[in-house]
Length: 114
Figure 1 (tube, rainbow, N blue to C red):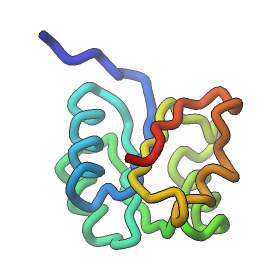
Figure 2: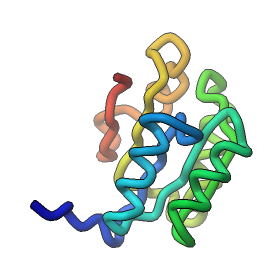
Figure 3: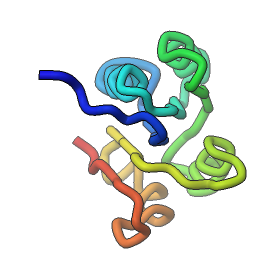
Figure 4: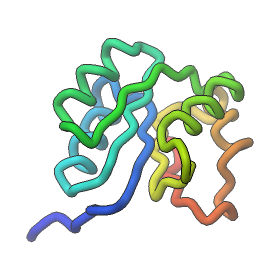
């Protein structure tokens, strides 16, 4: 079974520096999506983005901070500010800034914390 094409789609993934977050970034990139790799550890996010290819961007972001989360989202896709997927692996207590900014009614897909 082949992977679906995500060509022309954009995604923001938190926890992108390793583990499941990194795997999500790589899967989205392989399927053709532009990927913003967010992590509190910028060096780890940069390593993931480098493996994802030229359509990837690494950003440092502490998702427990609403200001940092808003800034990262704005920097991820300047101009349009639009993205197709937001994937977060943070626990609800630490990722509450995400849900105050991006609600399911915004028309953007949000994958809940695991």
